[in-house]
Length: 187
Length: 187
DNA sequence: CGTGTCATGTAATCAGTTACATGATTCA
DNA sequence: TGAATCATGTAACTGATTACATGACACG
Image (cartoon, rainbow over all chains, first blue to last red; front, top):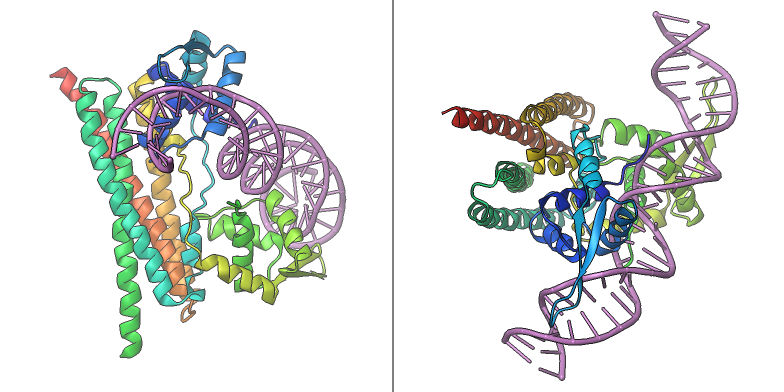
């Protein structure tokens, strides 16, 4: 079947919330949606242009004093329809590739201390991540109180938090197992 | 910096365990490693060839009666060194893109029943997934008892199980929230 | 007699990343 | 004076997926 460009729909979706520039979109995915979606400039700008050619979005230049000009895009009615249509479709299963797990899988080939360091590192990342999401949660709960989209945003955020907690706890369990494995050998 | 081809290292890694054909590798990622790593033929065969040209693996044709000929690849000493070197490197953070979460994020634009159906669907997948991993766990625990790699394989498997459980529970929580949201409106 | 498995591979295409280019303003 | 932020974009590349092509054997 046709391969569907996910970036395309992500951009359309973000534009359903409010008109934005490519730069705004990048910032959003970097700071607010990063825990489940990311994009990069080299993909955003060309696709925005393509969407404009297809009439799904319209861009208008905005002149600001001091700062560089921005090009702000808005969804057209056609764009909105196309996005909503996609939204209703079931999401195909995406292939999973986790480099950290791949390395752990071959952990036997490394000194145990190195593996432990890797896991500890991952644990640290999960903890930081969790803290960031909690801050983000407070912020958007206040900033968007009463917004009809908020319950859904909080659900996705909650996924991120659950994932981070799971990761942290799983790392601890791995470290524990590796240590007890050493004890066993001593005994 | 240089973009590193992950498939390349995944293939080298699998070949550290035993000589294999491209077909074997595909089967492995489909049935045993699918919960953290996947590959497809269109990528496996060309890369295997490239690795052979570079002297990291050697392939020898194997004739079998009845079945088509296989080409079985083994790691060379150079290949083993290159893999182990990569293994020691810290894993760069990979961009996250979860289509299901992206859709949930925009859940407000869909009828509530549709969102609930999507979540319920995801919950079902998580449950099936968990059951599969439990079966797999039993199988490899028996088949590879005493194998030095086993503890690491079980750790990655445990990650898969933790993830599936987390997903299942999070889905339940989402469904609960959506339902209670309806109650609130009635009141 | 049809479906599934074994088995290898290529071509076409698309998705996505990185590096580069440009330049003004603000803040330490 | 140097770094960070704002802001847009292109070119080159590589990573990854899909579809296609081929064909024998086993099983029900």
